Image 1 (cartoon, rainbow, N blue to C red):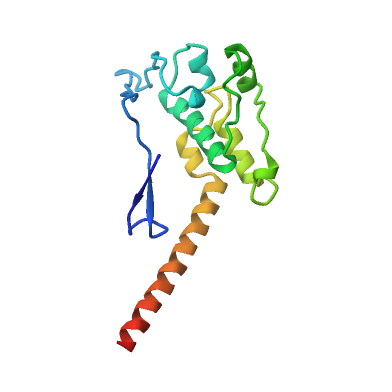
Image 2: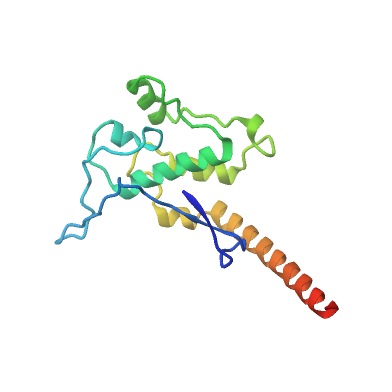
Length: 173
């Protein structure tokens, strides 16, 4: 993930760009049914790999990405990995499938985890890819919508203050 300066972003300063440096794939659909063809190449950074990759199963690339986004969200909120990737693979897989991660409350801003953050993270770190939320469901999740609205309101306020400062300095000059 890269932060790119851009004055057209919602906050007025940065855009988040999600990148992939060579481990991307093209998702194909079955011509007759339109169903996504499952991928079978095991690749990726172990920290972000979904359980189905560790199990070397065929997988829906979009659902693997949802898992990776869940890990990234957890990392951004805690500065820690949700799972101990130094464990033997069987123990790691058991922890992932058993959802054995905890929120380090001492690192959390409020000393607690909001219900919305807990819910969206659990939705993304669902071990069964068929039960894992899809990207469109995550975009419409209440936690994302509330945070987007708060960021948008703050951006509007900051832009209004900046414009007021610019116009008052112009009127003085």
